[in-house]
Image 1 (cartoon, rainbow, N blue to C red):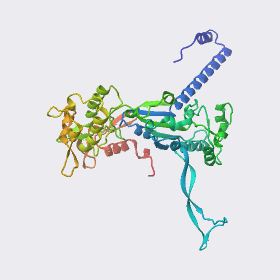
Image 2 (cartoon, rainbow, N blue to C red):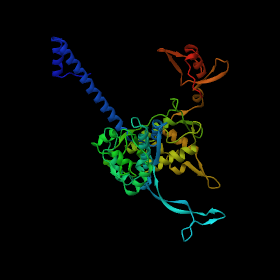
Image 3 (cartoon, rainbow, N blue to C red):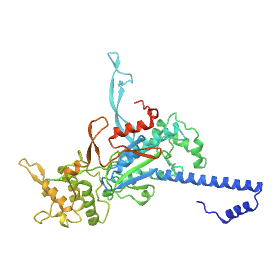
Length: 463
């Protein structure tokens, strides 16, 4: 895929005209040099890609599975998680002195221990101690992982949920400067630690040493940053510390994030899509009405189209997991209390209840209060007929009982027992590039596969 320059084309032309041994060696050297250049270029690309993932914000509509995406990617990794909120500040994110109760020995006015029945009397006393919060916990663990294995240290993740619900400028403070990473993934600009933090870091890193520290120091023109880090003099994010966050776009106006802060993060959009379970099968959820059930995904498609038209924005749309079902069904009570309330209070309240989907049977507006009635004790009872009316106005697809039954078909297994298998899912095994499809359940496919490959190919898992 490399397009040769004029000098390169001349080199190959001369090699054809003068195929002597000395020139052939020059050509060989050229190819060696060219391969080294490519290797260095690929390494730089890999370093860039790695650096791009150190600080990421997963954003999208509520219910799109942002936290789930992070959980999947960080499974089996070391993760420290925190959530931002309007009262979050530097001390709750990094650490601060807090009053704690400590048991101490009681002494008299002369300084001697008080002894009763042969035992020293103790009392609980309130003392102030520096308490690490999420950032400092993740920071210390990351450097300890580097000390354990400098070449391939274990990754440490700091996950911040709902990052835009806190004032990021106030919470990060001078840590903001650390977010600039060099191509090796370390902070470009270390910052000085204050006296309290220095004491805590010295205690945390006591006895710690990092082999091949010169490699890290080499990124800073020989400055001994490793010693400064372990002495608690500076803060410097290591390349195995990943800070990932989620942001709900429907709340983006709570605390606007400035452009300087945004620039230091990679942004990963999570689009609205169908839900799938851990086996890759499409999740089929239904909404409970008065007489029928309605397809949840159909509802999302219809209502998101209305939200997009009314707000001219993606922010207020609903993701698949905005509301979770129980045994595949979203009850009318949950649908009204969570979905209808959100639509009426947060989406259409400021955009008007226009159009036929908001009309009652008598032509009046389908207000939120009409979804409830009060019983004799004053308890709110959901009006399922109003739920059904709204879904019908919206044109949501009805899920019939026969549709649910048709998803599975009966069959006789190899052992003669009757069972059912999903029509939407077919298990296939590929052997030697030949597709093997067995008409049956997982057991049938497993047994057929064993018969073809032989028991000697089965690994003992020692479970």
